[in-house]
Length: 289
Length: 295
Image (cartoon, rainbow over all chains, first blue to last red; front, top):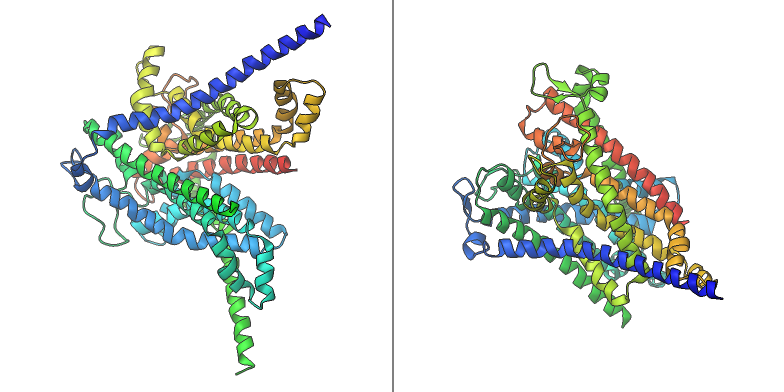
């Protein structure tokens, strides 16, 4: 009996030690995340002035602001949205509504998983080889947007498919029973139901695209081009590449420009994450009602 | 007219199906195109440079005369940084996943999830910037080095970047373990920790392994952070405390300086091809484990 309580005590102690260890590990992770966010806000907060946000970069990027850099990033995101959203949604519709359980479908799923794992710099190489050189788009908003679209396609396909899956089959059957075609059912019944999930995926994907540097390095980003692009075939400045250039390529670039750029980039990306979270929570709450 | 209408409708359905089908297989097409264009652009390199010297060469000096394209220093750089990162990330990732999945009260879980999503969304160039300005200074001081931009600096930053992948997939695996296992174990007198350690962890091991593999894939392919914090020295070294150059960093750093269509340009596609094959293999294996975990 005594022995039994001793083992029990020992076990409880071990449990406490490990629980504490895991709590500690989790706290390290939380601290890292908050540390970065808060550090950037403290360091970059003072750099963000009206002038910084509304003026073009000038004086070899050591003066002026980042207005056209922000707009460049927004252009790339808009381009990415235009290409990736329709293709991604239709691809998910195929997988969820049309595809049979066969080898091809298996291969498609495996491809999506693998595409999500392709390094971003390889997408950059592909964009350079295919869009910039082979299709002769040159280094441009067009080539960069297309490259980024491919990068986020797996995100959009997977989240759209999840959303389509959550639409109950009874709705599809009801629509088909009323004489609607398969396509009409998808467009008018299934898609509206799945919309919050699809938008969440799109927003998350766009946030990812906004922060990526490697894919636009050889396909779209300009080292220094303070004016707005004239057409989709012009190069643009973009926030992530601009930050990279300020930090590593421009000798004695002022610190406040670096931290300010980093903070603006972080805030844009975080804004997308927050918007996605809000849409998701609202959809969840509505469903509960 | 009445006969034409159904025919037109059928044709329209057919067209829609074709479009949908083409979009459906887009991922297969894109993967095929990526492989094709990596091969196409690296063809010049493989035709003009001996493959053995490429795969077994110990010097990467594309601008020296004669130019050397040995991939070993870059592979060693990638391997050092990645394994360092994964060794740091495994305890952090699995520990956090266990905490979230097994221990954390619901409210803590609801707070932790967005924190990890934020971590996933921080751009790699920002992480690289922080690594350069903050961490490298500490590394330099602690180990008394001439530069703080080392493989270890890269490993630490990359470890945190791989955490969202490792945590979320491990946690899914832990959640997928049926509660009846836990109840059976505790009914036999096991403590909660013994249950987690001896029942839940083994049951979730396939998923946790897959999570680690995917984290490794993420780390090997990461570009901007390593480019900024590992010092970019393409020498063959085997120390965590020296500057290294990874495959990804080489592509990103040198592509801007090459003549398009030249041998050096083509060699960068060749190492890109190697990188693509490595990550493809890792993801392929990870996918098998994920499927096994799903049963």
